[in-house]
Amino acid sequence: MKYNCNIIKDLLPSYTDNICSDESKKIIEEHFEECPSCLKLSEIMKDDSIENSLNKEKEDVLSKHNRHVKRKTYTIGIITSVILILPVIVCLICNLAIGHALDWFFIVLTSMLLTASFIVVPLIAESKKLLWTILCSTVSLILLLLTCCIYAGGSWFFIAASSCIFGISVIFAPYIIRNIPFQKSITRHRNIIVFLWDSIWLYAILITCGLYGHYDILYWQMSFVISTYVLTGILLIISIITYAKTVKPVKAGLTIMIAGLWTGLANNAIHLLMPSIKCNGIENIDLSKGFSTIITDNAIFNANVYFTIIVTSFITGIILIGIGFILKHKNR
Image 1 (spheres, rainbow, N blue to C red):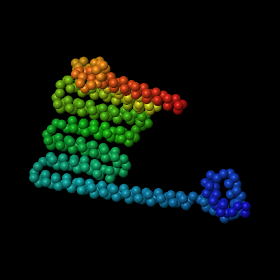
Image 2 (spheres, helix red, strand yellow; image 1 turned 180 degrees about the vertical axis):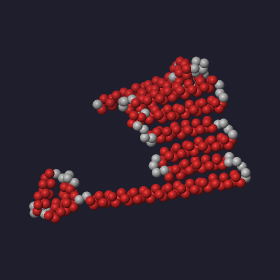
Image 3 (tube, rainbow, N blue to C red; image 1 turned 45 degrees about the horizontal axis):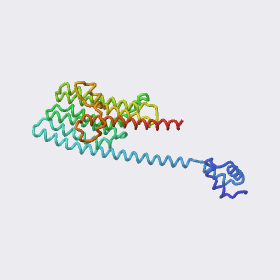
Image 4 (cartoon, rainbow, N blue to C red; image 1 turned 135 degrees about the vertical axis):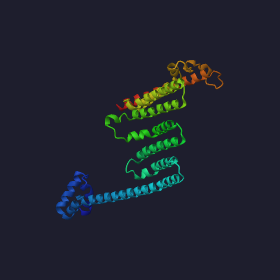
């Protein structure tokens, strides 16, 4: 033989995977004509039935383990549910024994539901555990507020419910919307959907507070005008981030400029929308007096601050936009 079998065996792995050079391939195949044992070894190495069998066995083991874990967690969830039901049953028996109506019993029941939402739901849910936990806990919290309000004879339920839903939405609505299977045509509008959902509940808080407090027309004007002004600026920023087809530094520059302009002109815009309310804005600027805290005229101090915010945001935004155009030009 021209080549030793040990040398050929060292080359067989690369030959089997078809990654060796043409020269090595030629040498190995010439050796096969003289050495049946090396040829047989090559055929065995090409046979992937053993590897497939091992992979299948591995998948079976993992699948069996997952089923065991799911069954175990489900059992723990059921046991926990039974434990949480016990206080409810005890309260029901005590309430009936002393001849009371089923009033505070429902408070205990909804409290246990809220507890179960955080403990039992993650154990029982097979997929999207966090999503189901958020939804179930929110519903349980609303029911608890309702039962407490009814038991106390109050009229604050809608204020508490709208405030809780708004707070939960601000934190978890992006995650919930992202896990809802929308059509592709709607998927790119998820940011706007989250914004609109949060805005609805913000206005719900304003309405319920106004009705609960029996406030005059000034409350309705100020609350809705100021909130709408702020939300409009946020909507512009979200629209730029979501739909502007440009590089990230340009988006960042535009958002900073809008945020600075919206902040600096807030008082002027509110006064324009509500002329009856005097809001000292940027028209009182007097940079010669600086930013000292000993300025007796607060309107001048505020105007200087607003003007500085606008100028700083525009300078920062222009720098970022310039960087973005440079990067875009380099990428091209």
